[in-house]
Length: 265
Image 1 (cartoon, rainbow, N blue to C red):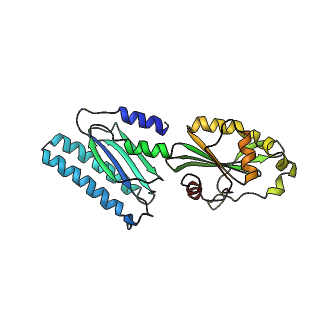
Image 2: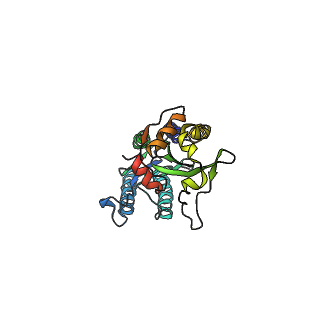
Image 3: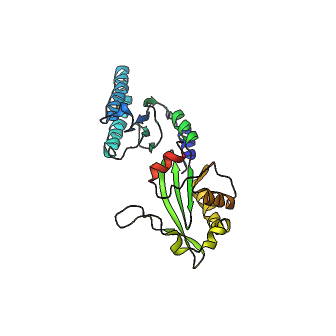
């Protein structure tokens, strides 16, 4: 399910009583206010305030529903405490387990807690508008690296390599023996200079692959980054224009560094 469809499903979800917890939690380790895992304190205090409010109302059924979902949220955050990024967004139903939606995002999040009869999606909608499903395409001589992203988070990182014998583009193994992304191969050892001269024709074989990825991954936009010659030649082969075209070779950069260069420019 694309994030856009999930947002629509969340907006359509309601309960008779207040039993839906919506949490937006800033977990950004680079934020001075989040030093020493301050997010855990904010989570505890936010949940405590809601619990005290419900206790004061005297509604035992509502308190039971809240306590159920509170423990589930705490377990979720503790389990993933070492893998947190800039923020966490959680929607959960306390009356039952039919609603459980968790997103760990690589975009700024303002901490807020809501206990209503429906998910509070406004901040998620704002984040999605700024960081929708998007592809980042990085063509180089002989390789095309592609990041599949949503809400600033890298969902997949794939590389396609050109085979001059069959004259086809094939997906390349992403990791080396040490579990790291392999560096780009020698440009001159595999491909003849004529491919650089006819770069636009050279990249045409990737056009169908890009169209398939756009449809399968639900990209709302895509970006192209690479040396000017390669980036322009690749863009010319595409049916649609990219949201941006940046003249910088990022093929061997870490995925999060690419995100910072492209989406947070």
